[in-house]
Amino acid sequence: MHFGIEDYALIGDCETAALVSRTGSIDWLCLPRFDSEACFAALLGSPENGRWQIAPAGKARATRRYRPGTLILETQFHTSTGSVTLIDFMPLRKSHPQIIRILRCTRGHVRIKTDLAIRFDYGHTIPWVTRETDGAIAAIAGPHLLFHRSSVPVEGHRLHTVSEFKIRKGQTVTFDLQYSDSVQRYRVRTDPKTALRKTQADWCKWSCRCTYKGPFAEALERSLITLKALTYAPTGGVLAAATTSLPEQPGGERNWDYRYCWIRDATFTLLAFIHAGYHREASRWREWLARSAAGSPDQLQVLYGVAGERNILEWQVPWLSGYRGASPVRIGNAASAQLQLDIYGELADALYQDGHSPHSVLRKNLDFEFGLLEVLKKIWRQPDHGIWEMRGPERQFTHSKVMIWVAFDRIIKRFARADLDAPFAEWRVLRDKIHEDVCSHGFDKKLNSFVQYYGSKQADASLLLIPLVGFLPPSDPRVAGTVRFIEKHLLRHGLVRRYQTAKTNDGLRGSEGAFLPCSFWLADNYELLGRHADAERLLKRLLKLRNDVGLLSEEYHLQKKCLVGNFPQAFSHVGLVNTIMNLYRTRGPAHQRSS
Image 1 (spheres, helix red, strand yellow):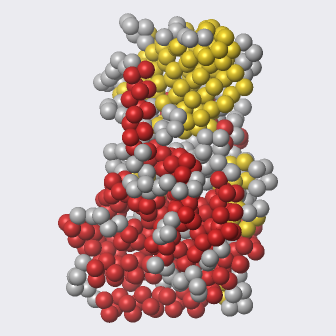
Image 2 (cartoon, helix red, strand yellow; image 1 turned 90 degrees about the vertical axis):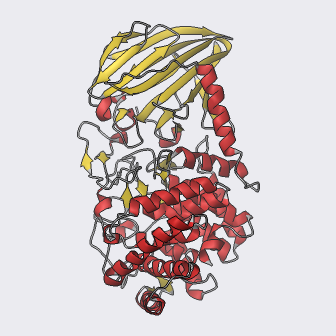
Image 3 (tube, rainbow, N blue to C red; image 1 turned 90 degrees about the horizontal axis):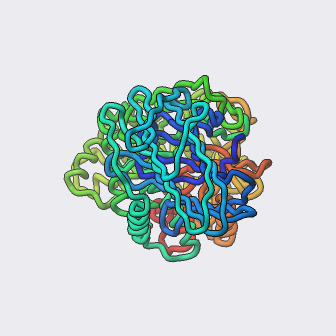
């Protein structure tokens, strides 16, 4: 039986992550990296595709929380005979990934069942399980090896490792799962209580660096911790989500792999880190962008692997039934090969907004950006697949043209700031020409709004970015007209849809939920338009959509009133951070970027 997406919490070590259900079951875990093959894949199939559950044997009521300022999860189970607390965490990695689970009885006594089913290769491969001389369990298949230790006896039963025991008030039971490659067979002896103290200290030290102290500070901190957890520590890349193929509509086919880093998320993510005081994270993200995009500018991709990998081939997993039957289950993402012209503007804007780069890196980036404009001079009139990575026909998407203008605007300013020789006159003429082209063909006077693509009559939430990137000032009447048009056609129950799927040929069947980042963009627009009360009302509505431990997915299903899409979604949490600071700081990210 699948749980709701909102029933999961995240634990991680900034190199990979696991999803833990409300019933103490780890149903998703990829090792050793975020984008590696899963060894627990019950989230997209059944328990036989791998999971690790620790829970009371009988009926129990569960409550949970994160320890303040950390990614340490505490789940309290209350039964008729007693209560226990399950503490789940992953120590920040020094060598190999590790999950530690500590069970403490706080009242009476509780009978506990554990069930560990290791299935490598996305739930497909059953490992060979043996017992080590010190009592640990070793599960091996090809290059993969997992060691499992517990302070209670375990046994094999029908290709599962299980245990059942009674725990009494004051007693503690510990569990440890460590990954190694099967050749090295690396394993470290860890004291779970010492590891818990160290992990808590590490996270608290990081979270206390946040400089924001205004309204909704706790929600903002939780989102920042989530963003840190979705950052691949060795490179600084921030991936979109920890999961693949969680559907945008129950039972639908809009199921994508989001365990990669999108150029499109660059500027919003950068500003969220900078404005919250995390300049090192912002700098490392900028460095990741520069490294990953390096090469011939005409080969710039939409997305990359967490270390900058370019080959993100998409394939389908036939042995997984999908989350609640939503198929196909996809690994990789074919959008990496699409032409999406807006990414040029996002990359240029991210490099422009970050003013903390050493001069040597700055000079190198400027050379690369010169090449970007040379490419855009040739291709800016081409149609593309747009910000939403549609799999229908290519179009002259208005947002894409706006972001091409952003590329010219920011690179002109960067070269001028560095006092370098450049063909400024030529670039400015072309920048103005692109601006005029968008205003002439992307704006419909009868509708008094910008439209999805040239000649269209449809609204698109990406148009909310027009004032946020400085293409037009918020005071321009075309901005207010576009906001009203989006409110009329895309705003439902206080939340914003990306576009009208029934009226747009996006190459897919079915519909989708309200897109949460777009809803945050609408709140930002309200603030820039002087509609602070509307902005605050929408922000509070969005905050209520978080699950009980403060996490957001990509979308929200308006009819079923549940979270949908990949989870947790970095772009949603970036939106939350930026919107809070836009509303309650004198000069937030939106004011900085729009100016």
